[in-house]
Image (cartoon, rainbow, N blue to C red; front, side, top):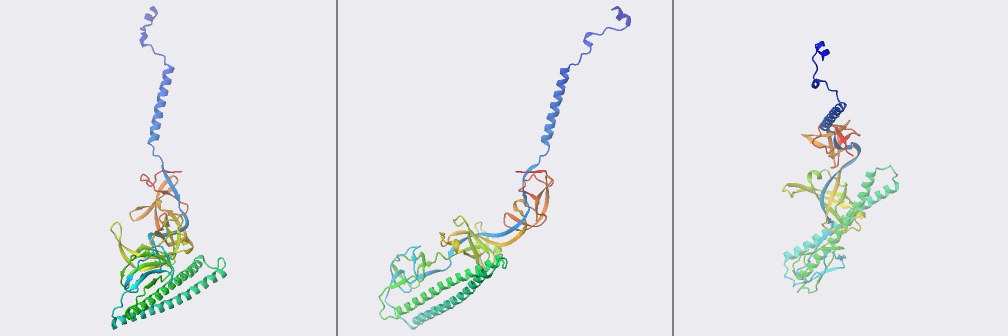
Length: 420
């Protein structure tokens, strides 16, 4: 005490003495600060924009075929409606739809003629004129058959010559197919003309029988046998029950089910692109594989048809010939529903992009190109399209990778990552 008083310094209270820093408290502060900085880093990392996962596709070169697809129906090429040759009492028709008939052999029904009416000069002149008309039609059918046979022989000889003399590479595949198709079409025309000739012969026989019935004194009570004019199947029975029938009334319809064609009603703006001879595919007919067909005719006149939405459309009938090899064994019949796919444009080497990568802005087409993990908007000039692939005229090159169905969040310069 004396020493402290002599030095002039007051004694330091014990509560003001400096505390010795604790090592445990310093470690706790370091841990807290580290946790805080870690949480802040995680928040910043979470708020940072992440690359958008997208699906990529590649622009490539290859063949491209554009098709027109429309619903259609099968129909028998040549059909014949059998009518009553005379007025009388018709017996019941024993045949049903689907029964086979043979030309000149199968009896369709019997007609018991009534008493021959008094015939005047005008009626007889009409009957004679009908016979002359049917004779002219028979002569025309005969000449048409000879013409089609001549054309068929020439087409077949040309096809045989190509098969025997043409070496690989000396004739294009397209020309070879055209020559083969021409031979097949001419053969079908011969069959059609033979059918027409048989019909003309039958009509002449019926016209003579009708005149004989009218001119027979007192009438002829012998029943008239109505035989099948052509071979085929019964398609429809118009009059089945026994009844008094007038001359010219339809009784039943006959056709050859093996001779089918396809009729499709196609929009006029698409029909102008279709040419006779174009390949076609018949799908959704009930079988596993599509049937091959060829466009035979595009009718020159359109008609108005109202769609299911109430919109008036101009449509054109397009007829297609089915491939006989693929048609064998199929249960297709008359008026069966099918889908017709017709090729209207084809190129072997086309720069093309998936249609799902294109989107429209105003009047131009654009797409997102994958460039160094970023999406870049590119304007594309397009051409033909088959629905899945679209022809690229300008704006892209082979090997470019584009975004398929990009989401709305993707903009020009957005970071993206490929989705696997």
